[in-house]
Image (tube, rainbow, N blue to C red; front, side):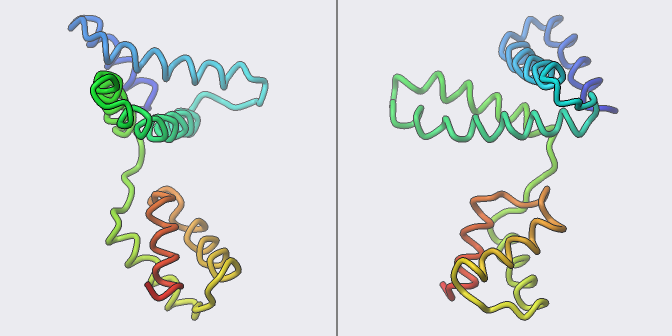
Length: 154
């Protein structure tokens, strides 16, 4: 089932269930897709567009979490909303590797390609090879940490 069709079905069910949080997140995502379609960039409405929009929104939500955590009790409701929206959106995105699997992949790429050069140049080479074939599988922060650990010997 296409992402759009799945989201439309979930929206109909949320209306029946009077599920406001789900309706809110669906409305936000649909609005972002519509904005992208109307931007004049010439994108077509397909699963790739939906994934890109969802991915960008997930990234935005993740960046907001520390601010809500700093607010303590005052930010608790907002933090709960953000976590709900994250969980909803992540259902439609490819699963990312965890820290251990990311580290193993980085070690394999470094060993297979004979890369041991540290510093910016070595990091760039490894990141390029990783992104070439594994972009959708990797979390950027975990990848940076793993590359630094492998090249830096840490």
